[in-house]
Image (tube, rainbow, N blue to C red; front, side):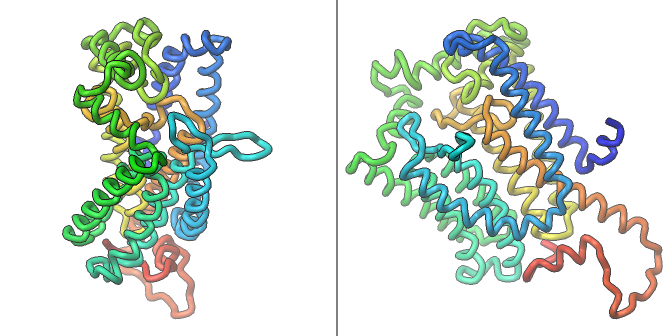
Amino acid sequence: MQGLLQKTKGDKVIWSVVIILSLISLLAVFSSTQSLAYRMDKNSTYYLIKQLMVLALGLVLIYWVHKINYTKFAKIAIFLYAISLPLLLYTLLFGTTLNEGSRWIKLPVINLTFQTSDMAKLALFMFLARIMSTKQAVIKDLKKGFIPVVVPVALTCALIAPANLSTALMLGFTCCILFFIGRVRVKHILMLAAAGLTGFILLFTVSKLTGFGRANTWEQRILSFVGAGDESAKKEGEDFQVLQGKIAIASGGAFGKGPGHSEAKDFLPHGYSDFIYANIIAEYGLVGGIVVMLLYLLFLWRSILIFKRCPFAFGAFLAVGLSITLVFQAMLNMAVNVHLVPVTGLTLPMISMGGSSIWFTSIAIGIVLSVSKYVDEEVINTEKKPAVAKPVKPKQKINTQNQIEKELPETVAVI
């Protein structure tokens, strides 16, 4: 155990946040799945054990990925993005349908079902980090800088939007933040936002006219949010889910009813996934809800510190891009639970019950920790250098992190 701790590198605060979120997940999933286990004729600990195994594998993935030099993800990003687009198209046309949306595909032989948009998010931000790092010298130019980085975003969002609009909108907004950080011109970002709005209107119109897509679902969610939904939806469906979420939050008070003592979990649909945050507030109160929110913000803050310390564009964009999308998803989920935005179907990262979504999130966290690990090592190596460095022979090979990073094509070293 001591040897494992010594081999574990990277930001210790991020490691602590991940472990605490995993423990919260186990408590929340166990409490919120009692009724589900009864309805599915399962043992009361069935979903707890399942979630424990998923999280354990997630932690293994984080540890394994964080040991990899983050510069190697530059090549992996090309392959991962190249296969994500066909998978998204296949999911859209032939994927498993749930709530009128095709979001999942089932792998043959092992019968594992996973949501391709989770992989696409990871692939997109890895690919964007590579492109933006190589285009920093011309990033303000429309043709040479902006178009090469915006095309991958447009393709990915276009393939995700028909079946999973909330994820597509989240990706587009997060990419705009990343573009702003990456010194893209504001007017170009506004052009992208206008194009995205136009695309949504066009998609909604085509869906309403042809019946293909989820226009009716999107319309109902917006009407439900503003209180103009039909009477049948108020008794069951999303209006009922939102109502039960409000009851759960109101019953929690300041300190909650205690683990497992909330009655709302027996009535709240998807209280173990989309609306798990409402159950957390019901059992741990407003204090518990604030603690969960602060944990995500702490993760983002530590990732921003990594971004500021990283001397190279690729690593910096990796850390900030992956962390922003994770935390933004968490904030959207919380906003849905407290009825600040319409229902989206997004889960709470590392807390909601899941499988592949937790694993892809774990890989993203591992990459952030990989950047942190090698940045820390570079700082230590720099501090150990003598005040007056000895001249280096022309043929001598310097095997440092700086040299590895500079091998990326056209990479600009400093943002």
